[in-house]
Length: 320
Image (cartoon, rainbow, N blue to C red):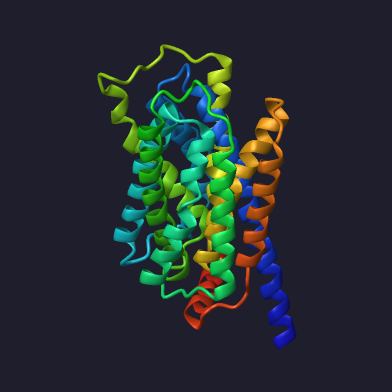
């Protein structure tokens, strides 16, 4: 029985790691797509379209699962907090940040998220970090800062200080979202897809009134590149990335899952190499290796009993 349980645990851990990696790749592509789309499309229109596409995709799934997808008593406040943090406030900060700064500088700020989440997990989820995990954080965050520091600036960042500050605010919102999603999956037994659907529906309702702001430029129609950007962000990034990440943090301690965020600058540079014919410098290669080393060290299986119990409860919730 012990061997069987260990096998299931190992399989679940591998599935969680694969899901987290997939989420990071999808989120990395979103930086490129958003940066390109907001040059011709209002940021609030882009985000509303993204949430609308995701809601449309989730609607038939919600109808099929309406009997299983029910609110758990006592969870409404946590659900509201999660949704306000992300997608509501997070995307306001994120898209505005990418108006003023480059994707590489935004990636540097994104690298701060694991530290912020680890502190929140220690304060609110009773998760503790081993020395090996702490070393992994130091290496990964140091590599992410190094990676961003050696990236070339572009003319598309008119106010990088303001943009980086907005990205930092987005990371505060992301911290609240991650901690709330962890509690909702582990304590209340919500499935990752239910949480992702809630985020899409709430985001759609939240951003709809913003289209009537005087500063929002609503186009009469979308051209094909704009339409494809909205569909990709809504159907693939919003559903795919958040679904994968919600699944990942339901199976591993949130402090370990958050360290994968440091892969976003690496994958963003890879996307630039593939689609924009950019090349890594030797320093960027070294920084990427340092980040992967930190990821490896941070994935130590030893956790506290409280964290293990949370993961077990989350897995049971996902199976339901």
